[in-house]
Image (cartoon, rainbow over the protein chains, first blue to last red):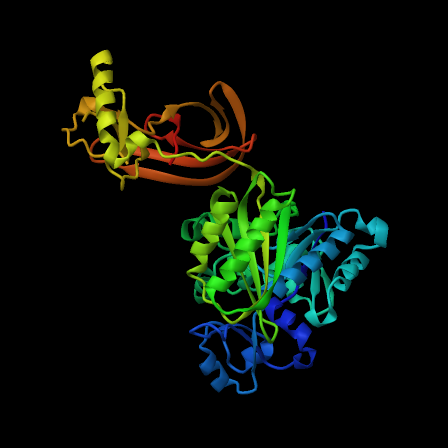
Length: 398
Length: 93
């Protein structure tokens, strides 16, 4: 089962470079200059050499490396280009899975592609051809997803690194622990403990790793040994309805934006695809006036909602949104489309003001059966390590 | 939310919640290989986690080894081996 991993390091910065290719090679910093506290979100190796680190204040970063160019993130463009790459990859292989943890990283199952392209290396070359050269994509090919990702991590821009099944243990043993799918603080902890490589990590006894780092640590230990049978699982295909609106005048206030959104939601629910349906998720993309800037928010609804409740939810959530500038164009994407669903109301008798009917019902049941058959859950020893001692059912006897 | 009835709690009005359920387990060196739940036998696909609880050694000792299991039908179950009674139980943790 040969698996390829296509990686575009510094994905957000590389996307920004598509607009300004002359900046390639300069120290680049990704930031959020519109927000109150501008910090470094990402930095290219050239900027890292200048002493800049992610999380650093932007002013401090500028002082350390005056030649650094600050670029703003463009989430709408990143999503669009990410989807375009995914679609191009799907033309080559039906099994393409985007990495959930890292933007700009995809796993591709190459099984059978050697029959079309002669070799796996040729198939991998075609994967790189799916991306713009300025994105500096690289590919790792191995028998498992983890090894393929590490191989892509050490491959040079535009090149392919193939790791055979026999060579995988030796290759992984030399790789640094930063490739483990563990939180950054755990990686730092490992490095401080004098465990710089995956080889040193796998030399630790499995039970000690599990005791110290839990289930995630144990799974990472198995991956570091090359024990990785995870298949490539393509994301589920979801039907969505997209509605777009170019504002007659750039919207500078929430009220103006809300008028536009209300119109879009009404129009979308009038379409055949959404008529009589409910949606679970709404994604709002906004293009800002002037230079290429954008923002997007995904609103996941607690339960499937119809037109009126979607408008109410948008109005409520927009109160907390900080508008980074006048909005020229808005796109609403409705996904998680379901049939109209009934809402489960709370059991009215359980409300604090409605105890009387419940009390009367319990009295009647007691009269009929001799005891109250209604119980409520009570904490007994919630701290106990013995599960059956934490809670108990106690007769509800008002 | 049910209002507090303010009635005195009596032990005979208490019912245990999440009580362990005795089950049949085929094990090798105290590692479960298959379990029988509701008269259906399931193979253990994978032991996802295991932990030990030892407590109350000063009165009635409790010594359990819990196993979080992934079964062949895709369901997850938590069982434990009572090391004192040498018996197996099903219990959510």
